[in-house]
Image 1 (cartoon, rainbow, N blue to C red):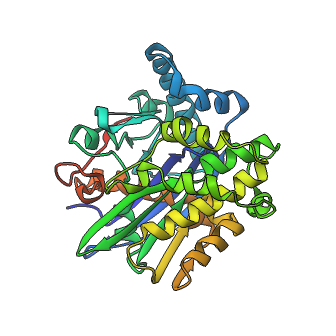
Image 2 (cartoon, rainbow, N blue to C red):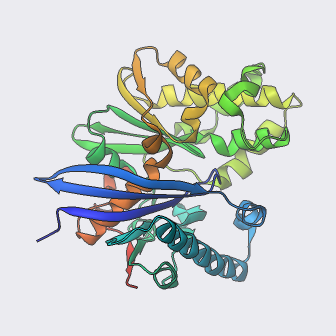
Length: 355
């Protein structure tokens, strides 16, 4: 019989490079109904070495990527073990780790999340469930998004679950199918331009608020082919590097205007992506702290009730859901939905390494 309670740690590193999120979660399941409580949680920031490595890794050679993968697995394992030791966490069922996405090219049947080598279980001193995307790509899927099944199981009261991280993505129910897809870049671009002004990020969107919209740039951004593609669809940093940044850089305008214009672009694309413009929306991810962005999204969707949850869920929702994916894998239950990734069928994905 499957257990009714699981004590696990979710570990997540997003494309916005904020750091490594760790959250200890206890899940309970009764008659198919899941509940959770998040206990200890923290974000471990990357040092300058790792920030620079992860920013340029998309251009690494195969041997450089192999070394990076090994080094990052060691980093993740050590940070996880330290988190466990400092918080005196005992009786864990598993550590459920996403790793960090370096390359995501599902059209080539390839995706790489570093930090998922088998050694991680020995370094962390725990059973580890990880590497959730590869199997889906091998089955013809996008390997993303993976969060929607968690949205369905843990947040059923919301019509939409919107994540505002390095990219925006949304999930929702449609005729008893969960649908989900990436919408547009968000913090990957906003943080890039904030950095040019000497800031890690645009606090509450204050710099963007001071800028002006360049309507020609806005029109060109909104006209990009990706936004016309049917879902399932997903984005990687390659899209930002090869398409978004060159387009914005072709405009000789102040950085604050680039930020203002891109905020408008994000809000427009989110509003366009939602099939119905009313109901309840749960907004999470670092972008939910950007007051100006949230104001612009609400302005585009005046009939929608937008909820921002308490801090632990807001900041650690992805770590929470990857913890759930690991638990579902341990139960040999579906943790990836073909309706959102486009794979051949629903499946239970991930690799399990025993300590």
